[in-house]
Length: 464
Image (cartoon, rainbow, N blue to C red; front, side, top):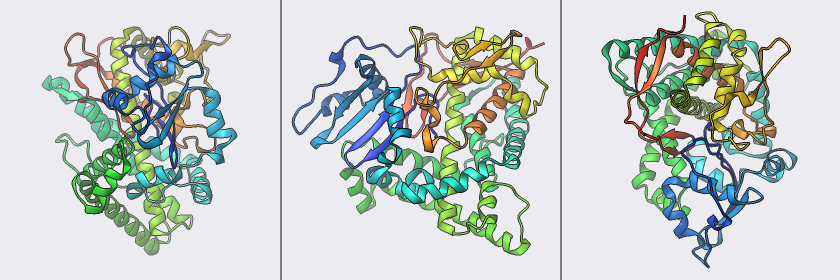
């Protein structure tokens, strides 16, 4: 999913081919001016030296190359003849994600990179296995009871943990890493939604949680495998169980052991009670007859990955952009003012300006693409009220598109809009950074803010 809301990085790996769609999100990222930005390729080495020199800003670099390409597509040559094709052309995206979907598999490269962590989960398989998991998951995600459960979980975490923590920060005049806080918030939510377990990461003491830390390590190290110049390097380390691969093995073992423990406990509870009162995803899978332990473990881990960092990363960048664009914040506050203190689902769904502002974080069309301008997603109806005008998923593939389109898209927007409404209703988020500071993007499986997002919270006085 999830995929990342601020720099959409979609990987469709074949044995020697990765098809990648890159989007740029910030004013500070500069436009390319000429085709000469396409790096030179040499026999054997390919464009290794250019790749190496741009390793820390690879997203910005490849985006500049895409801008200089008439077709918004180019081939990057790696060591020993392997290639990556980068595209930001909606026609190509539609070709891969829909029209010829079954020609573009995850493939052995992608499966090999993520198998230790995700196993045979829905994000790491093709063919009949993917189709079966997709059908099962789609059925569960389309139930009203799950939507209600998600709403309850998010509201509880928001009002019982997040808001009190931010209130304490106002009183103490302390600096918080908002990115870390939002990650903890999202992790609590997704664990409760996925298998009914509360890791309680967002307690006032910000406790360390072995499962959360292991999941973080497994995600980060797995993502670094994708960026390795030679896959043989990490495979050798895995064979000898040393370095980062030893840490990955330890982390994955902890994650999978814990997930299996939860699965067994749920299965035992089902055997004892004949039915489960909980409506989390794991309980739904088990009660629908999908009781294989490995299947349940793989699919639950996949859903935690999908919901863990995606919304928290999106919200981190969103609050930064609001600080830089006070006129947008003012419009969102007008919308929040028209809702109740604890808006029900339909009220949140109707927050079209906020929805547009969340979408604008990936917008690059038009001469003013670098401007944070939610209005480009909106138009007025006959009564003068804003209505949201969506874009096709091939031009805006943040939630994937075609048969693999994200099942949790609406839930993600629900969670983000409730957080935005709850936080901005009471607080003003003020970055605790020096003048002229520009955050840097660091890309793992999602796109985070390098070094975190230090902020001070101020009590809001301008809503009424």
